[in-house]
Image 1 (spheres, rainbow, N blue to C red):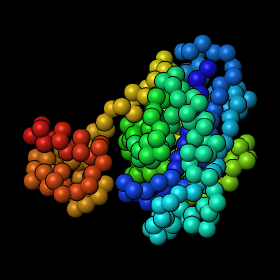
Image 2 (cartoon, helix red, strand yellow):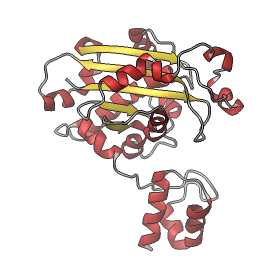
Image 3 (tube, rainbow, N blue to C red):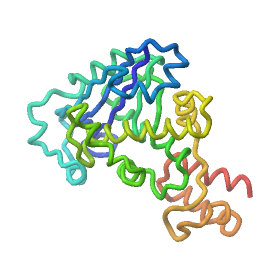
Image 4 (cartoon, rainbow, N blue to C red):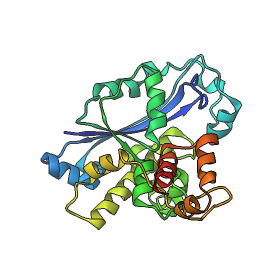
Length: 267
């Protein structure tokens, strides 16, 4: 049966040299004998512990790479906390990650491109089918002011469910803590599944999330800068040079770059 591995990392920083110092994960292992289509369509039940087994991971990892002060200010992990810990490559999570590394199983993260890049620095070569809850949320929840995990935690009311969910897994929830973020991500994943089912209950929700993960998002409005809340399409017609400047000068995510190129090619 398919395995669903939710994960999040905390790192020494966000530069090419940086490495993992904490990993949080939840492995959902469906034990109920669904057929493949039924299994995927009943993912909400699979996420429930009475329909399968779950295993949490919460591990600190040592590294020779110094932790930046900027990173410590976010996740509050200090050099003393990881001293004497095994490296990530010796963690229990890494062993499980490699054990189930096939396309029949799902690897799930919020902004998975970043976290997967951190795994690859440790020598991991991915074979999982990927699901990015960040990109899926952008597609399915376009009216949210932000798609950051902690924003959605409150805007979607996920915080109301987290205490009972945490007790199931014996997890303590903290913002910017890997295992706490994984728990919120698991609740977000279930919300996205229900959103898909509400729109069309004949759609296979997991397959849809995989499709959305691999589909760039066409962003409608600017959420930053001098044209905040204006439609990007309007700005492309009124001030094309501004979009060209953004592409040339700013560090933009894949979806914003796709959006700007789309509207520049249209007008």
